[in-house]
Length: 124
Ligand SMILES: O=C(CCCC[C@@H]1SC[C@@H]2NC(=O)N[C@@H]21)NCCc1cc([N+](=O)[O-])ccc1O
Image (cartoon, rainbow, N blue to C red; front, side):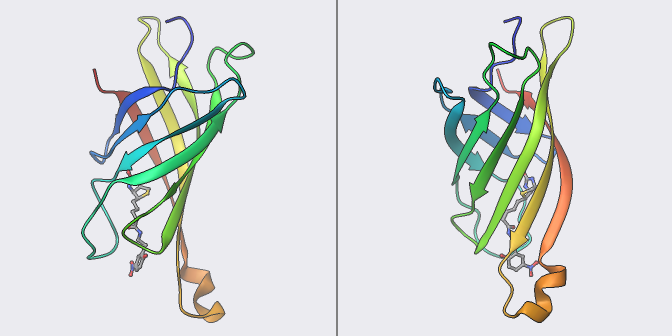
């Protein structure tokens, strides 16, 4: 494919994997996220994701964003990124994320958000 396509199965350098469903005409998509890591001692479970991308007819290397609402912890992560394709047609999703945990009081708000990067590649 000469254009990045988000739908399919992806993994990142932490060992997490995600499945993105078909992208609809307005760029919306849903999927499932299975994180390999967690900051809680909770048992990790698959969590839903919802996102949107710029329609591919405009961009080859499209930008996107998605939200994962964790089913096992009162926290939420948003990912934003871009799909890059090398000259062999290999796609890479370079992303940054914000992880917001639920804290018990506004006084703890300062420590409630973590930030990081993740790189995703396709799982054949
Ligand atoms: O762990 C999670 C959900 C999974 C996040 C996985 C991240 S998303 C970015 C990165 N990429 C990826 O694949 N996986 C990781 N929430 C913990 C928040 C939390 C922390 C504490 N605490 O630290 O005390 C207490 C209560 C809490 O709810």
